[in-house]
View (tube, rainbow, N blue to C red):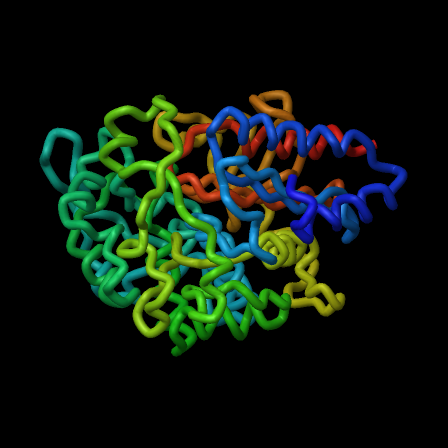
Length: 408
């Protein structure tokens, strides 16, 4: 950890002021180990319990010429999804959106969908419900999903990596492809949140970025979270490392030497009038995202104002997958013990988990190895930030495990 970095000073001052917590040094030790192994150029973390900082710090490769900027900005990829879901839940609380509503009644282009079967035949799809979009059960896919013909169609079209089209155009293009399975049938990671985001635009009458700003970012004080980075702040934007999708699909288990990777076309920082997505696209900081993580625990702003009712917070945390849909698989990787709620994963049975966690822990991660968790039972939240696209390292869950070990 660089002592010049403000979070290093926060770590020194704050963790020592909480005598009930111990073993926080293990968090930095785990992070530093991954840096020294060459898996990441930098790792930043921020962890709180009951609103107080448990630990905050960063680890940085010696090959990196300068310390982290103040309040580094990251591309958070799929950690965009829980924020978009939260905005949808806020509209649900006002009865402007319902889980049982057919998607086609809001976006007519999705009314008469087809399902592409494994043998190449097709059949008419059952109606997609709004709930299916939250829970990756709508029948959509992703371009990187192995052995998925629909994902291959997305890949050949360039749909996911086109950062030049609007969310409306994205949804219209997506509606032209068949579904990978009948809606409601199973959990399959997908562009469902991008479609949900377009639903929010239609229901609210506002562009997604403006809606999130008003409903989520402003109330929670998330001053650095948007679908773009102002030119004056781009020196804080962390560089991306990683591999292309083709490289990852060909050799998913290979750990390559860190190399810079340009994602500006697929994930632009300078197109606020065009670029917005529901499944990825946001830029954020550790300080901003920890505010969102805490909001998911209690539904309140940092000042204590309730954005969601107590019962709605309870409601959004419940697992929604049936027994036969568990464990859910993210590509070739299962998530034993976890269910899936309206925001993301939720731990139902720690006895099935494959890394240290807590009952009721939930959250999500991003493709560049960002990660967050929120544990309502412990009132315990954490954010891990880095930028390595396609990394399969267990760094994120190891840091969460180290944070849990620090709790007395």
